[in-house]
Length: 324
Length: 165
Ligand SMILES: Cc1cc2nc3c(=O)[nH]c(=O)nc-3n(C[C@H](O)[C@H](O)[C@H](O)COP(=O)(O)OP(=O)(O)OC[C@H]3O[C@@H](n4cnc5c(N)ncnc54)[C@H](O)[C@@H]3O)c2cc1C
Ligand code: SF4
Ligand code: FES
Ligand code: FES
Image (cartoon, rainbow over all chains, first blue to last red; front, side):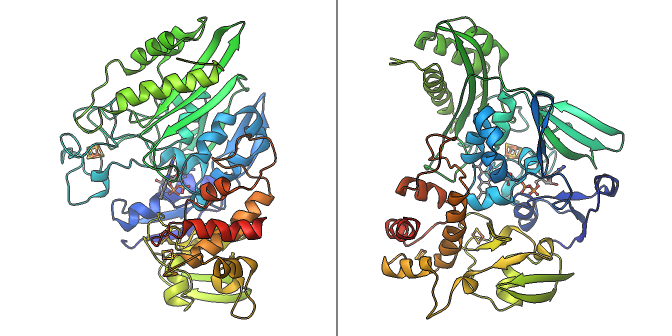
């Protein structure tokens, strides 16, 4: 690890003014600092700021940026009204890591692309212009949607996938004041600048994530991974589905493991709306989600896998007796 | 960096570089070698300790971030002649072979039982809004952050189930 100056922020304003790298749970940043992928000169510890509460706001919920993943998953309001979020959190990392990981840090965790971690190999995200080793390389964990010829990294968060399906809004404090950024506009696609991942500027501090009023319906989070627990997603889906009189009244779907950000396709949701659930309908939704996919040799399996995961999740959420 | 840590009921003052993790502070600066280093990257759980009663990976937290915190390591849970119930159960059930992962397993299980008592659900919990029913499936899921290269998993689960009841 390179040397750095450590200090503790005493207020949100203090943290924003510092322009330094923030550390919250430290579970991603310290890992990257040990590999010298992140080499901050100054680290400001925000973990003791007063941003660790979950409070009602309007008909929704305001989740402080420092609420730990374990506390968020166990919160009774979240378990009852936003169960897809509890489920996604509980499907990620381990008991120990969830006790440390924060809401803000989880949103901003970096990709698990193996070449991003391997400083001996070119990587545009780590070193703009160096090239992408994953294209044509080992890319089993990489993305198939939203990619560019500069980077095919997948976003690793489970929590963010559920937040995408819930239409969460990220509250940010920066030099120019407070901004509220819908999560759909929070992440950037790699394009020619894969090192720029979000709508945040230097010094911006996430203060909270806001959840709108509960959507009701059935909430599901299904994650496929290489082992039963404690592994990143190959493919995951968050689904919030409301049925009315035998047809799908509305559906929100977000995917993990497929793209550089939690992936949502409104055309697929629209196709489900007003229709009675059926395997053919789910297949059509999958076509719409996966159209335009650019798989590589190692990760092409994600296309049929995503299709099957979506069908199984929707059948379950629509409470179909026998989907086949 | 001046850091004050309350470890196993005793105050320790540490003057170390900001880069020192809680794990290295315990092992190298304070001589508490019961806590083990496996991967140093949050992937194995060998370094699990309790910080203010919650289980964490000591390799992914800086000692200076823990200033003022209460830390419990395996040395603080019990000692020969006065073992904690989980320590005794690991012996009774052969919950280890080489023993390298064991301090982390026992610290993790100790806090995990508190999480169950507090009603925290897990990935293995069927109904998020019903009381948690401890079962081998629940224990396996909740302990998945602690790897054992000797694969003593069945005996570890038995040991924890005996104490958890
Ligand atoms: C072995 C292992 C397995 C894992 N498995 C999974 C998994 O299956 N699923 C999953 O989703 N995740 C997984 N994770 C990742 C884990 O969820 C993240 O590391 C964690 O959520 C990051 O949160 P943190 O608070 O520790 O962030 P930190 O490491 O403290 O920070 C991460 C980044 O966010 C910035 N930051 C933090 N808070 C703020 C803020 N409020 N405002 C602005 N910037 C901020 C930091 O500067 C840093 O750049 C795993 C991690 C490990 C080590
Ligand atoms: S996919 Fe992105 S993160 Fe991975 S090597 Fe290519 S540029 Fe780097
Ligand atoms: S040494 Fe900390 S998790 Fe492996
Ligand atoms: S007993 Fe050897 S690693 Fe677990």
